[in-house]
Amino acid sequence: QSALTQPASVSGSPEQSITISCTGTSSDIGTYDLVSWYQQHPDRAPKLMIYEVTKRPSGVSNRFSGSKSGNTASLTISGLQAEDEADYYCCSYVGDYTLVFGTGTKVTVL
Amino acid sequence: QVQLQQWGAGLLKPSETLSLTCAVYSGTISGSFSGYYWSWIRQPPGKGLEWIGEINHSGSTNYNPSLKSRVTMSVDTSNNQFSLKLNSVTAADTAVYYCASRRGSGLYYFDYWGQGTLVTVSS
Image (cartoon, rainbow over all chains, first blue to last red):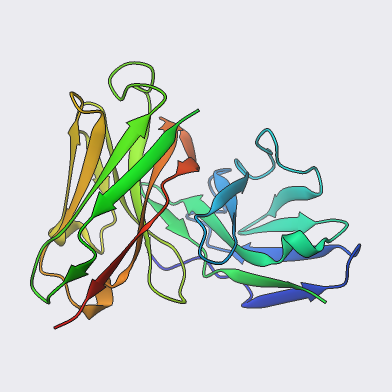
């Protein structure tokens, strides 16, 4: 199972909105609504931001939202802030009790 | 909420066996957290995350097919911890290894993570 495909980098100015894509196949993202997103700051453990495509854990800002269309899931960050600068990873259930992460996206706040 | 603390050897030679342990706090693997699955995830320096596999309180495991032949996971409910062994390591296994919790059957996301352990494989 190959890694899900994400853009290497996405950038935006403060207060702008950005969207990170996560592309899989009809066998994983296209079949299961089991996509999650993680934020990782340098030298820190990842943090869950979105689960089951659109759900936000308690304590995560509502500036973060998730969606899915076909074989591609997306994470949108609205009202971009300096603290959002980090790496972001998607993850999907791919069947047979296994999971796969995306290639990762570095978000830069200009 | 789940708290995870992990430890293990940080420097290995090629062909040796990687061994890491993760302790669970704020609840018990066989009690309050009995529905959870306990995962290992790794991240080579400067690279992305890779799911290694998981185990539940009864010892049922699921492994990444690409690592399955070298991975063994175990659970110790009496000490409330779970472990990872990866044999025949090479430089490609150099990574930060994380333990993480997955809330249970049908819930495929990692809500709590350990602090990470850097494992370096070098002769």
